Length: 356
Length: 247
Ligand SMILES: Cc1ncc(C[n+]2csc(CCOP(=O)(O)OP(=O)(O)O)c2C)c(N)n1
Ligand code: SF4
Image 1 (cartoon, rainbow over the protein chains, first blue to last red):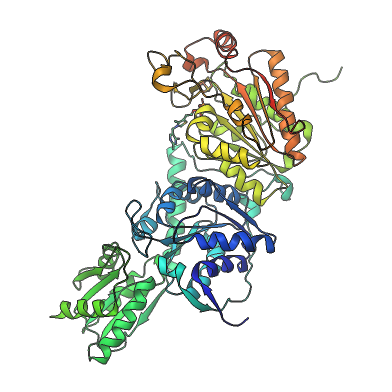
Image 2 (spheres, rainbow over the protein chains, first blue to last red; image 1 turned 180 degrees about the vertical axis):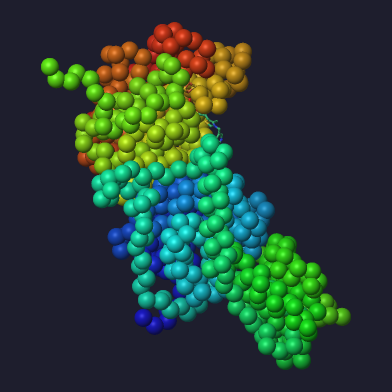
């Protein structure tokens, strides 16, 4: 199949189907409602399940119930909806069920606005819900990358028996871009009979399975949390993903930026280069686990005088960048969080201001 | 002479943690007997509540999911939609179903989800120590209504069975009681009907069971049974409220 022009939200829906996920529950919210609208038409065509839930709270538990049966399942929402789903995400993580959540972020706090934002960075990478859990968080910078990430998200969720989140800003959902769908990918969750509540008749062993999150015995709960921790450590070893840009030369400033914002930074870097100023960038493609080492290395380069975290929020990623740079260089923040995407010129000005 | 009494296969050997005289055990047994009689144990998935029955999975011998407080009907929806061949039921208390999870049960019933709900109405929050529930009777004392439930302040108890019956979507809705053998026999019939409608892929089914919580009512088990019969049954009328065959 060649390239087709598609809106990000629709491409995300199609990508899930091509990843073999034929189950979708959701509640409408701007700027991601097109996923539900697309799948309301598309799921019946492929014999899949589409259901509009009564709230994001309910949807997150529909996801839990379906995931607990060992079936591929996903939902999409935007910031306020993800806040409501966070309780369910905590339970799904605790119960070790695979599921994919897509957050097409809008501005907050509260109702905030409906324009693009990256203000759920901390919510998605540091918690959101209660308890010691982590999500694998992927941050696409184009519709093509969103498609590829959605398709990889399902096998990764199954590998770790843990929810995976696609963290896209509103533009990723709303943008029309040419996309090419990778070959149909369908990996059966191989070990689901060991844990899923899919009916004892499904299994040879005829032993019953239990999906639960409560461990009243402190030793058992501690052991359970150590098991979860080991998975997050494995993610940190095996799932770091980032892209370097213009790191070969003697750059004076290192930008760390992800999603749509990183594309603006790319243009700014190209323009600055034309003006004779070298700036490099590390773009985390996964924001959890975070590419600490890559950023540390890039910031340590002799020519590099400062590090700039550029985000469509009030600097939520700065802490992670600081924890990467470890005091070797000053870390600054630039961004906006009203819904406007900073322009390349604004990023250029900020870089120049830093060096003056 | 053959066996006159035996434990259903669907029940495990574990000793329950319920207080003496608690009717959760009776409800468990009825569900287990029905599952045995219908021969569905191998394709049944139970979804437990948050409440005194949170560890009910220990007492059954088939697949189980442990829900968050009130969300069992959403989980059942998810499970049943992606695996319509499974037999799915939720088991919920009155805090779980009629308070925090009200939205989930109403919408699941209204969509006509093909699962079964066993609803334990014991007029209090048992697990957390006897606080007021939406089903607490007028003037009934609880730890958060120490002077009795004041209707002027917090309204009348919610009649869940009647409320769900008002939905236009076909379904099976009944209320029975676990306080005397004759009621218990009717309760079992109702539970069996609800599961049968599910097996036939007909409709959503809910059986509300008037139950006792001697511990939090501050009564002996026998007094609790008497109190439930005298104080609850005139308000919570027993019977079959809705049946898909009549719709
Ligand atoms: C979100 C959330 N809020 C509150 C609680 C605390 N809690 C646990 S059980 C319960 C009430 C249970 O009462 P009921 O549903 O009537 O069941 P019973 O214990 O009487 O069987 C509450 C409030 C919780 N676990 N989760
Ligand atoms: S507290 Fe009440 S509902 Fe809970 S086990 Fe004891 S008697 Fe039963």
